[in-house]
Structures are given as C-alpha cells and as structure tokens.
Image (cartoon, rainbow, N blue to C red; front, top):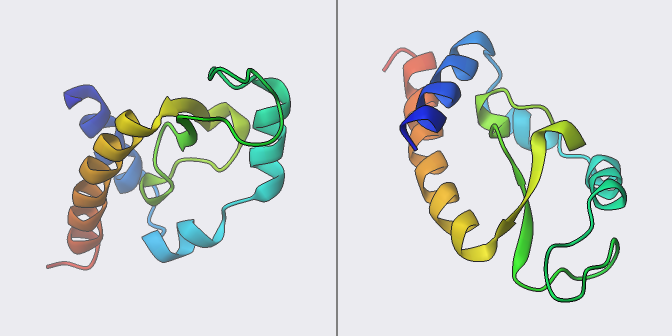
Length: 102
C-alpha cells in the first residue's frame, strides 16, 4: 500500500486536474473495451454482463491523474475495492487540499 500511496501522490502532483474534472472523464467505451479484453475472473467467466464479486478498478485513481483507459484498469474483488477506495478517498482529499494551498 505504501508504494501505491507514493504513486498516487507523485501522479497527482504532476497532474493538476481536480477530482471533479477526473470524474467527468469516465468513459463507458473504455470500460467496455476493458471487458472485451479481460474476461471476468468470477464464476461466470464472461466478457459481458455482471461479474459477480468483482468490479473494474482504476489502478491509478482518476483523481491522481490516472487515465480512464483499459491500460489503467484491473479486475478487483469487491472487498479489495472497498478497502482501496477508502484509502484513495483520503489520499485524493489530501491532494486536493494541497493543490488548493490549504
């Protein structure tokens, strides 16, 4: 997790976009392309439809300058995603605060 934290901070410093701007960049097309290229690791093992127990995650969060494309996406269990999301929310909030000079 420390390595992920460092990556997020470095990318966020290099990319001055806000979380709100990053959130707007989410692309259904990118998600579709990822699903097309990566079979669901869950029991269904499909490329389309629900992937029980898994979500598509941005490896480098959008708020930290991560790209919204398949190269920055991975399958992640729901449990792992919740833990990573909690950490990223804190880190991204701190980055926004730092960018705004607070």
